[in-house]
Length: 73
Image (cartoon, rainbow, N blue to C red; front, top):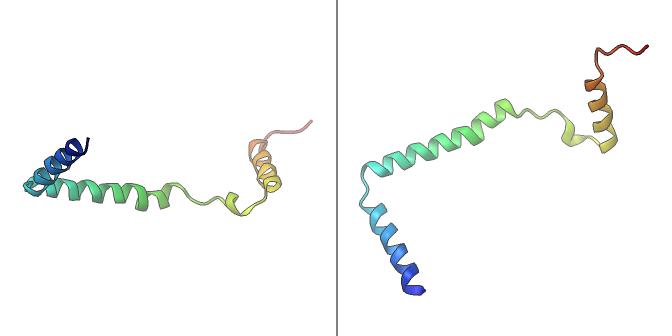
């Protein structure tokens, strides 16, 4: 089992050390992932204040938002 794992490790170590274009592509992939998960997250997942409210306040706000515009006869 140990020799199998060491062969796998050696395979990837040699493969990654001999990459030329692959290193650039991995850098591009990492930069794109950083932009997607860190930068874009701040624009699309705005804090609505739910994290600072109690469960009762969250429920009241949800009901208010869901019934907004509905007339009560």
